[in-house]
Length: 281
Ligand code: FES
Image (cartoon, rainbow, N blue to C red; front, side):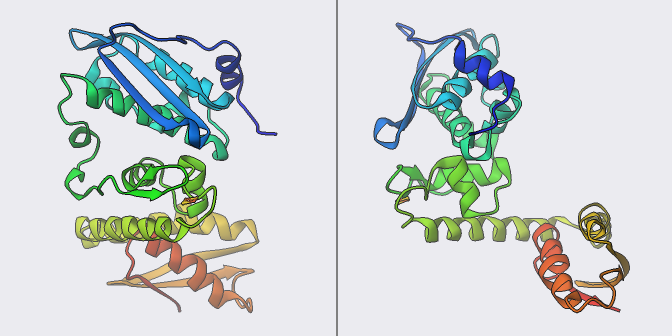
């Protein structure tokens, strides 16, 4: 049984703005019946303001709740503000969704994006949402079972900080049936984070990098080690070489090398620079 917030339950039991708008100014769709969930959203837009929104959905309670709250979120807002709404905003407005149901919020985001793309005044949503629009992937279908494109996976990674294939499945459904696409999904994850790392590296000055390493050690790594009675101190940084001292239970532990490489070094590589090497002094 999933753990749903009161808001999800309320919007599922009393969905707002269900139905169709005749003569809608924009209509967007996401999902498909073949995939088990589908959503159609209708917008009425006047003078750049969304004056009405309705939806029709075939899906689970989370899909109904996500669609319902999305209509409430956009009515009365300017098109420019509506363009900035992400699936995370939808989930946040519902006080969260179970990880396995995050794909419902993504479906709302996709339907909205589709509607705005079809709107006459549509400018260039991707430019607004994504400064790397030029680097975005094509509309290539990655998951044949659910018809999920590379763009959708790319957006889900970017907007939600997903790191694993399982998380991508939870957010987009891709990989959730035959599983043949899992290798491709992993490739997309690897490519995305490679680009992110390159961007971070070129963006950080040496001083910023030192600060960031310090920050990650203090805020992420040390608290994790302290949970098991260990700890870590940053001793020095020389380029990409980070010198540390393990403390408490970590000091002298037979697995300290594993802690250093598989946890400390991996975390710093993922968050700061993929070339970082961690050594104990
Ligand atoms: S192709 Fe993606 S689950 Fe089958």
